Length: 272
Image (cartoon, rainbow, N blue to C red; front, side):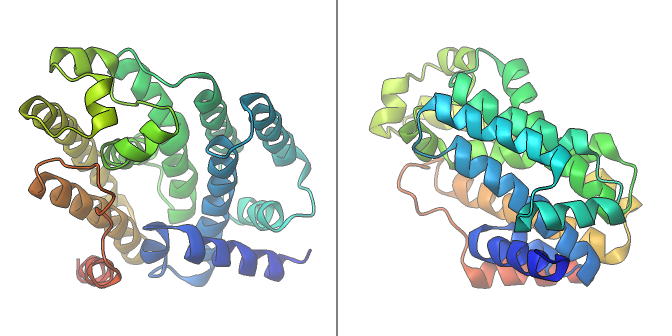
């Protein structure tokens, strides 16, 4: 497959599959936009396997194949585009392997005893995306990029409690569930109790701390890259605002932002 066709495919995947990613990268110049789309499409491959319906053993085999493909560059759109992006930008291959390791962890671990364990998982599945992307944006703020990725994942965890439960996963730390008096039966029943609101309020406050720490990297970016990252953050912040305004009722699946709201946030990012 030639490079142009490969990039066309990863951009199509990003437009079709990304909830927020596509809105942020639209402000980037073409070369950077295509490289970020290649990273997203690879992350999508990992998620599709880890969250799919295959038995865990087959999922692990598929994910191990992704590890191997990073070193061999098969004639596949995602890997052809990703190889070209890596030739243009210093995208660390370890960050891509970390993403795969995060997918593997999802096949092996479905509960986290405490935040330390959850944070390690978030660094793999989302912090690694930040580390890969910051190389394209053109900054060496690796720690803050990872922190921002963790922040976005923490917001995902709050938003996707119901979806994750249906996959057999509870990412909210077990010690914090116990401390706030929330049981997994409450999650299964979708009970929005005072205890649940207190627990999710704590999760939201922590996510905001990570978000603000990560956003300190904007000062190191050029204008369009800063607008892109600012848009991502704005979309996730707006989602968290909406969750809080609903009293942390995340169980009915109606928390997605409208396309108009997303475009307004893109505009705000450009005016930053």
